[in-house]
Length: 174
Image (tube, rainbow, N blue to C red):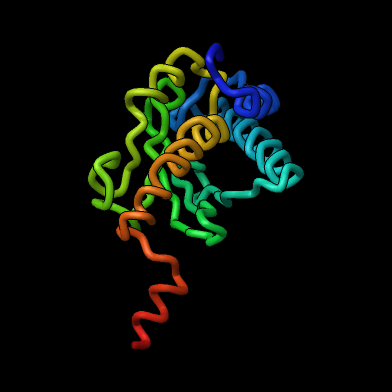
């Protein structure tokens, strides 16, 4: 955590670490891991809300907890830009981080792979590997998606690649 800003350090230290090293194929151990994931996500969400920094909603979209969907948003120039968020838990999880997808902005930035998967290889994946199995979904959102949104969304908005929903609605009416 050397070289990190104090806010990121503070946030990260308050997200509970996980202890169960289990993936989707590990039966009861996976169920225990999912409980830890939910506890960590709940703590992170509550912390964000208490700091007036609420920026995502996700939930497992299947009973096995291997497919997750939701919304994330970023405020730029006092306008809220909201995106669908989805990802699958890899079979090799937690050794492999989930690939976070924002399908609505697929192809609008070079820092994205086919299907809207955001690029996390250079900065986040080594950090994930170093902290396996202690990091979970909340950590991927905090250290992967949040900085990606902060870096990319302002550029995409300023370049006109992304339009605010109100701007898109008014241009459709014209």
